Image 1 (cartoon, rainbow, N blue to C red):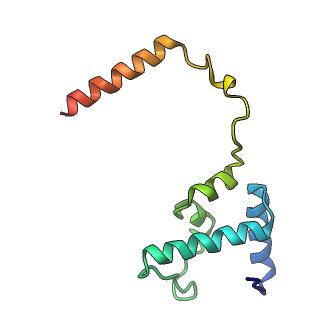
Image 2 (cartoon, rainbow, N blue to C red):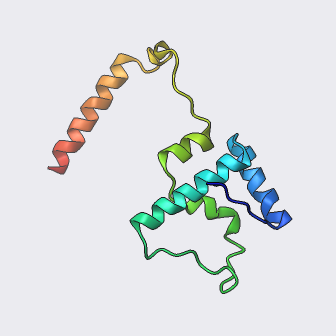
Length: 114
């Protein structure tokens, strides 16, 4: 489906900057945002977007993306994560003694919690 949007210049600039920061096109960014919103609506139909004119949220506007629930796919796009091509880069990163100590700590904590 194709959708045409008429956005205010400042809104378009803001969205374009967010897309650029994530390394994706504006179209790809908007598609992700809309799909995530639609998915959230499907799981929580009582959640409705608030009328911005009714309440002044301008102080929180720059942080709204932070509080938004995001899908794994969206996080991958935003963070520029790519599959590891060579798993050997992971070997030797943590000495075996540290891993053994970490695992022992995990078991101790689990036992302490019952």
